[in-house]
Amino acid sequence: MIAALLGLKHLRSLDLEGTRFDDTLADQLSVSTTLESLEVGATRITHVGLRSLLRMKQLRALDLWATDLSEADLQMLHKLPSLEYVSVGGYQGCTLRAAKIVGLLTSLPSLNRVWLDGIKLSPMQRSTLESKIPSVRISY
Image (cartoon, rainbow, N blue to C red):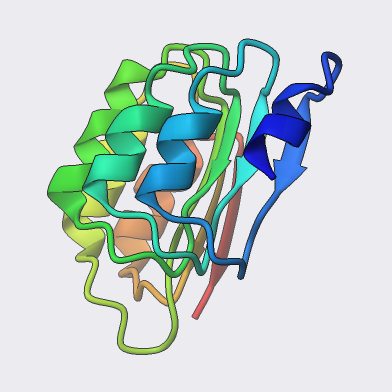
């Protein structure tokens, strides 16, 4: 499957949300030099797969919603210099801590859009995000 997708030389965006995408497939996909937007929310990707995806320096958008990634794992996003959009969080009861996530997101230099789902923010945390990131979407 991944080999066929990589054969599409003009593929810029790929939505694999809710599929059986995992670390092995992330490693295979990471050789892409054209993919700029990737949605892998609600998949089985772990920190190992995310580390593989970091080879795609051209990634501008990454959906990691409802994955088992921790705040420490998400720190790796700093290795994506062109990252403009990220989606993180999860279902109700998401274990990601708002203070850590806000700090991480506001420190990503190219980020200009974010979607947080299932992460309860205080009014101050929301204000901090909105003052530094032009487009903030929060659902809880």
